Amino acid sequence: MQLQRIVVTAIAFGLALGGNASGAELKIFGSRVTKMVIADIGAQFEQATGYKPVVVSDVAAVMKRRIESGELFDLAVLVDFQIDELIKAGKLIAATRADVMRAGIGVAVRRGAPKPDISTVEAFKQTLLAAKSITYLKEGASTRHLDRVFDRLGIADALKSKTTQPMTESVSEMVAQGEVELGIIVTPNILSVPGAELVGPLPQELQSYIVFAAAVSPQSANQQAVAKLIELLKSPAGGAVIKSKGMDPG
Image 1 (cartoon, helix red, strand yellow):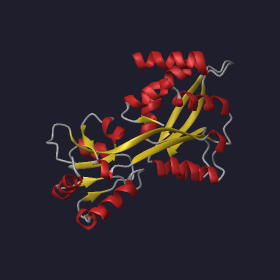
Image 2: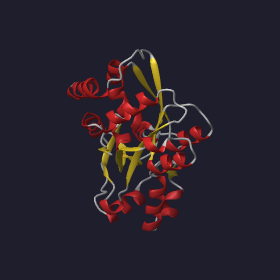
Image 3: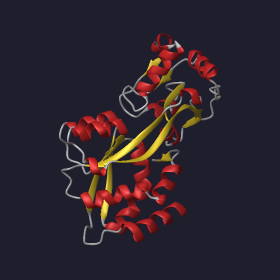
Image 4: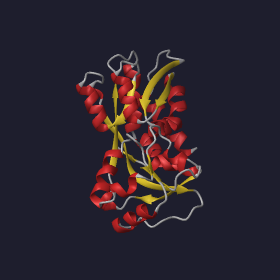
């Protein structure tokens, strides 16, 4: 409730748009982390401005392809390099680009299951080799980094036969349901699934932080409202919500 009061105050005193926009929707393309944050600030933003943020979410790479295919939207919140590529392609407005949050990569087990040792690089390596099954996204924000890590550790081939890579953001759900022993994905994704439990972050030597950036569509009819939503995400109030989801403000 305290976070909600902070957000309401931030909007009321710094972000209100005025005018009659009641019922207008802001279509946001993003991944699960975006949906988690907007779930906490969306209603307050709508109450203060009349604009309702609606998040359409999937793996960031999928949402990028939907933008490239010409789908209409107002705001994109994707991985920073994806946003930069879409700006170069003319699909987003460069002047509106802003880094809004970043997330580290963590390891998940089913809630209540023993937590393996991932405290050092060697312990993490041995835990992966000993696991009966692991999962990480087929084309998630952390996938390229994890592939490089496994190559660096010399275990890529050993993991292939026991690795499942879903196309959707279902890593934490698969772990929670007992389908897979270990899941590796950005930490907020793990925290969002009650049946999954965070073992901890990757060892610092192997860690990578995924930066999520936002930018406005040049086709949006609500560019002023979307810019105010980005301002809210970048504000201390927005930062408090982002931290509550296990991320760092951008």
